[in-house]
Amino acid sequence: MTSYDFWTFIIEKKITSSTILTASAVNIAQFVWDGVIVEDVIIRTDATGLAWGTNFQLLADGIVFFAETVANLWADTIMDADTASVTGIKALIEPGVKYISVQNTVANWTWAWVATVQLVCRKLSEVSSGNAI
Image (tube, rainbow, N blue to C red):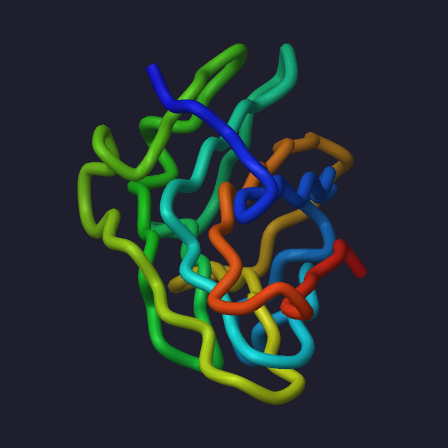
């Protein structure tokens, strides 16, 4: 079990499938100041799940740190970085204003299916912070 303290915070973002694109990544979280480490990613799909495309990806400043095969994100599914079928690693978010973004491979998504993404983050200094956008 993970214990949380002052240095740990969670960002939650609900993503509607029709906003996930292939050609360009869509920012879902912003970090400022002295950087953080994204220690875990937890994704939960709604009762309809996700469809289309090949991989659901999360990127830290353009670098993929979490990728899951879309076929594994069907209705009422929960995944984390440890169970990701493609990539699930910790991500260093360097100091400054940086972003976590979401992107799909092969095809733009459609419809109104929802995936809830939680980013478990650890501050690298007292002033580091982040929020969903």
